[in-house]
Image 1 (tube, rainbow, N blue to C red):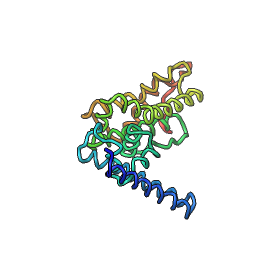
Image 2: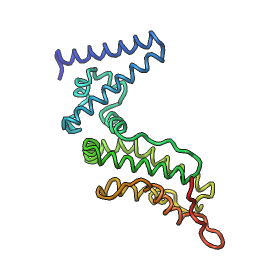
Image 3: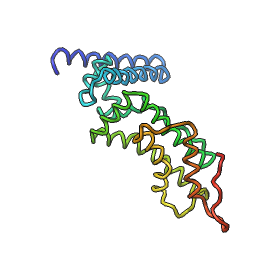
Image 4: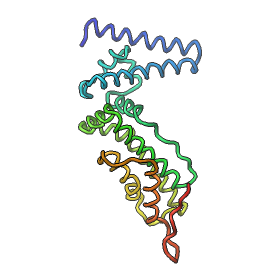
Length: 232
C-alpha cells in the first residue's frame, strides 16, 4: 500500500492538519473546534458510506476510510486509536443519543433509561445498516469488547447509580441485589428490543415495566407492601 499513493495520502493529511491549525490560529479555540468537528464528521460519514455500499466491517481499514473521507491516516489516528474505537463512535452516532436524567426520583430516571433502550430498539429495526453492524460486531470478539467497554458499560453504570440512589432514599428495599434488580428493569425491554423482533415496542412500555417491577421492590409497611409510585 506504499508508493506514490501512500505519499499522496500522507500529504493530504498534512494539508488537513495544517488547515485545522491555521483556523485555530486565526480565531482561537472557538474557530479551531468547528473545523475539527467537520473533519470528524467527514470520517464518520465515510465509514457510513462504506457500510451503505455493503462493505463488511472486516474489510473497512483505516486507509480505506481515509481515502473515502479525503483525509490522511494520521488525521484519523489523532482522533481514534484504531478501527474498534472508530466503529464504536460510528455506531453511537447512528443511535439515539444517551438521555439526560431528570433526577427527580428513581422511578423517573428509570423510565427515561428504559425509554432510551426502546428508542434504540426501534432504530435498530428501522435501519438495516445499524442492524447489520450490530450483527457483525457481535461476531467479532474484539469489536464487541470495545463496544461493550465504550458504550454498554457506561450505560450500565448509569442505571446502577440510579438504583443505588433509590435504595439510599428508601424507594426500594435495602436488602435487594442491585445487579439483579438492574436486570429485572432492563431485561424485559432488551428482550423485546434485541431478541424478539416481532414484539411490540409501543409508547408507554417503559412506564409499564418500571411500575410492574417496583411493585415487588417497594419497601413494605407493617400492613403489607406499599403501592408503587405512579408519578415521577
